[in-house]
Amino acid sequence: MGDDMRSGCPINLSLEVVGDRWSLLVIRDMMFGNRRHFRELLTKSEEGISSNILADRLKTLLAQGIITREDDPAHKQKGIYSLTEQGIELLPILAQMAAWGYKYLPVSEELGIRARLLSEGGPKMWAEFMDELRETHLGVKRRKKTGPSVGERLQAAYEKVVAKKR
Image (cartoon, rainbow, N blue to C red):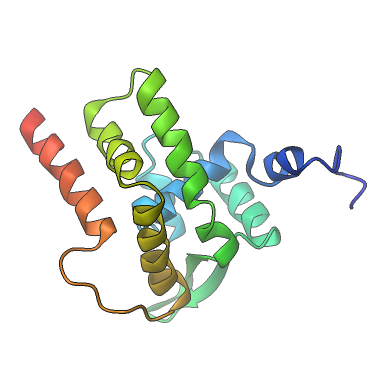
């Protein structure tokens, strides 16, 4: 264990990796928004992350093995960020945090709909979504499912709420 870690407690160690506010929001945007480029992560963040904080968090997440970065074949100056298996396995934690927030905090209807659906779908839905993320981020082929993916269902529910509010 490195000298920079405060204790060997698994909760403490996890928080030292992803415990700052921005790291989990970057991971959230990669998972639920399929934001894979620096510019997308910067400009489409609901919370308005600054470019220096985003660059720092991406560097940390890369160093911790939560994400990887490859050159974008379409644009050599750009990189494509992908979740690793470690990053993908944070999904149940984000789903549980979202469910808790949905239950106890004044979330907006449009940003709470995904939390509600993931909570109702439970571990079976989370596993299916993690398989979709593995296909997108790791290139792992999954068995073909009939009907829309979990990601598509979550996005459609969000868009329906947004459209209703207009």
